Image 1 (cartoon, rainbow, N blue to C red):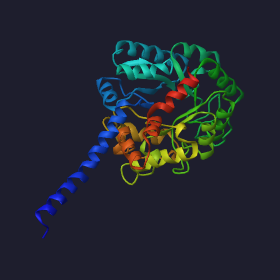
Image 2 (image 1 turned 135 degrees about the horizontal axis):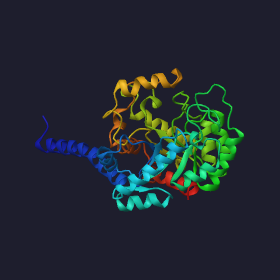
Image 3 (image 1 turned 120 degrees about the vertical axis):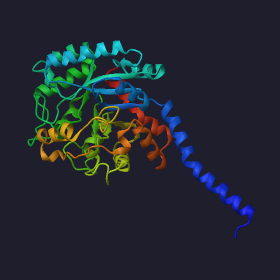
Image 4 (image 1 turned 30 degrees about the horizontal axis):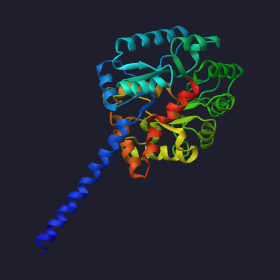
Length: 355
């Protein structure tokens, strides 16, 4: 039988051990709260009060917002509508026209919104439309979505043809005007061509590592390294079935952290960021199998490997990036590298591309 003193020592030791996770969470939360936090690609789901509440809980200093890009008029309407939304909610939102706007948003407790189109179809056949849309607030767009357009091949095309001559001209115009090149959904050769022909750093705002998850949307180590060598940033997407085949089951937040660490091993800590590819409040609060999953089965090819449910629970709530920080902190990440991942890398990239 232990003595009373030994019992008290054991109790004190147990209490100290129990306190460690709480202290670690406190340190992580403090770091998170003072850091610039940017989601490299998300989209609002019917921008109501639930989205604003989620932005506040998530502590987002900025987001790259996905807009509808069906044609030029649709794109113009989207940008005009967003300018109106930001004016109506100027206490919560700030239009990101420069990198400095993300700092101003953080200082004022708002969220900066950088306008991004997930395709270039809205340019139609005129590169001058880059200038017109930039004047309305666009600061980034993807050269292609999953399928071929006038600029190049998307990731689901068999041909893997790379950028067209028009695509090369558009990239040059984007560099000139101050629009960030996004290669997230581009095919393999289009991705490499986009990096090569851009005179400025580029982004792959929401993707993952093909070395860990073979998928049309994933990027090879060669593409991740080439992006970094150009000064760009690869954002690791938190959509569950992009990270692994069984989101919410065997595929967990640890696998998401594995993708981050693999990208860092290839590119360096200065060239990797975070992104979600879904609304700030997550997917589970609103998505149904009929509304979300079944339409994607019809729209995407089987190689896209769509799964239901598509989310990883630890990444679906507004504490998603706090949870990621805790995982990476346990893996030995320094505060400086965590701050880079949370937002400083995106901020540096925005400064070098949009000004």
